[in-house]
Each structure stands twice: as C-alpha cells, then as structure tokens.
Length: 112
Image (cartoon, rainbow, N blue to C red; front, side, top):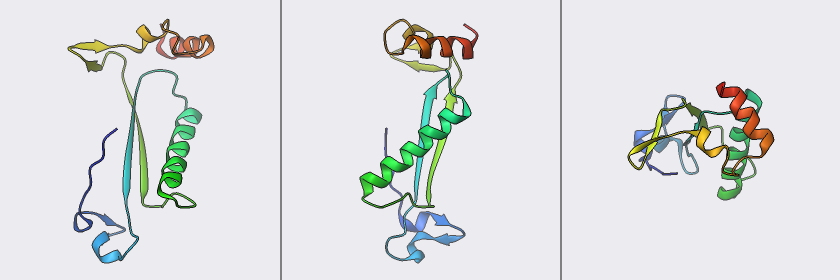
C-alpha cells in the first residue's frame, strides 16, 4: 500500500476545486490490485465495502465520504512479477494460504 498526497488545488469534485470547497473537504482514491483468482462480483463488492468501512473507522467518521473512491483491479494470471520473476497464484494453492474450498474455486476460475 502506498499513499500519494495531492494539494487541494490539484483535485476537484463535481467541477469544484477542493481548495474552494472549504475545510473538511477531502478526496481519496484507493486502488485494490489482486492476482487473478476467484473474484466473483459479490466478493469484489464485499472487499470494496470493507475497505471503505475500514477507512471511515480509521478516519474517525461515521461513514465513508462520497468523495472516496475504490477501484478493484485483477491482474491476469502470469502478469504479476517480483524478485526477477513472474508470480502465479497457482503456486500458492498448495501452500496452506487458501482453504481447500477456496483453492478449488481458484482452480475452477482459472481453468487449472
């Protein structure tokens, strides 16, 4: 996870610069990026809702701001790399990270 802070004069909501919106105006963009797997629509929605709820809790507000945005990106199998090589979710299936049920769902989703 990383954060990039922008000056209020560099961001707008509804065509209005945040610098002109007054105190308390904020904007947040959270990008959730995951390896390919069993990411059905209801699972994606739950992840997004939980991220927004956790951020509201962390910021001490009762609910997420309408100016907070979460995007959910799935990286295709074989398109994720680290440490000089290509990573695969398939190599994690036998590691104990996933339950047997979830590992079977990932295999089915990927046709493996």
